[in-house]
Image: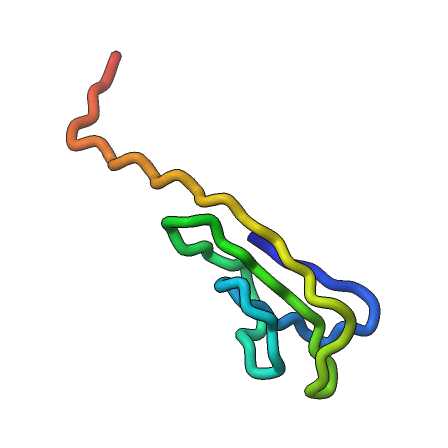
Length: 78
């Protein structure tokens, strides 16, 4: 999942456990890999000059299904 911002937002901070982002929360720098299991509650907020700006934006993200296992054998039809 990717996040974006516009305007005067310097950086985005985010949490993946449903808690409110703080000035010491993880700074968003690259796409987020969601943990498996239950749905994830992501919350993000703008951070500029060490201060939180605007409102917290929440998003409940569904769990991705697990990837199927790789096959043990490959067959050629030609």
